[in-house]
Image 1 (tube, rainbow, N blue to C red):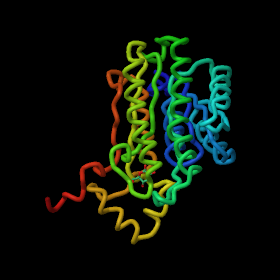
Image 2 (image 1 turned 180 degrees about the horizontal axis):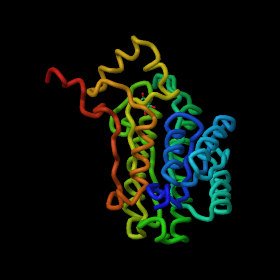
Image 3 (image 1 turned 60 degrees about the vertical axis):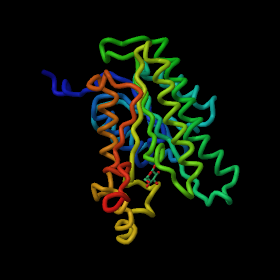
Length: 271
Ligand code: BGC
């Protein structure tokens, strides 16, 4: 047995959007460790994305940075074309790029609304559509997977939990939920699997305010029955599993990785 025979995604080609930091970074590294070659997409932060590439290469897989704004069709098309050129295939696409532009609802600007919808929803649409086009053309690559392709949408607990002060963000994630399920229904006969991971509070730059001081952390724990924050690597492991044939019969599902945040923690005592 060769030493990397245990690598569950060996030979597969993956793309992770928004992979220069936070959850995307952890997913890209986890996929690389599991044997996949990875396109590390970033919006702006090339330098950080370069470090992610180095880490993936250190684990024995190939990787390169592709800077692209996922809300822009031409840039998304160029990114997938480059992936095909460099790696020769597209097997796994993780729609992770996402932003928050928070504001009280009556002060929310059209720019804040459009930026969040643009990256979080339109970006996931554009990358998913391109993925499906490639998967269709390619068909099942039996040597690497039972499926013709896998799409993983990174959603949020806020696909079901309303969020005052973050109406644009919650609306985008609610949109991701039904977009994911509808695509899943449409492409299942092609043996393309489409699923979501819905993270709760994970220790990343996007929500630093909610965990970086002891007071904020204590407040946050009121929302988490499991009484700890999540780590990006925990989302990485869920993504590896969802991308692998171990989850081959799963499509159209949202997996909540949230320490119970969606369990109505307000009812722990009372009701
Ligand atoms: C948001 C974080 C937030 C978490 C739980 C995520 O989708 O991006 O800012 O901490 O949901 O509320």
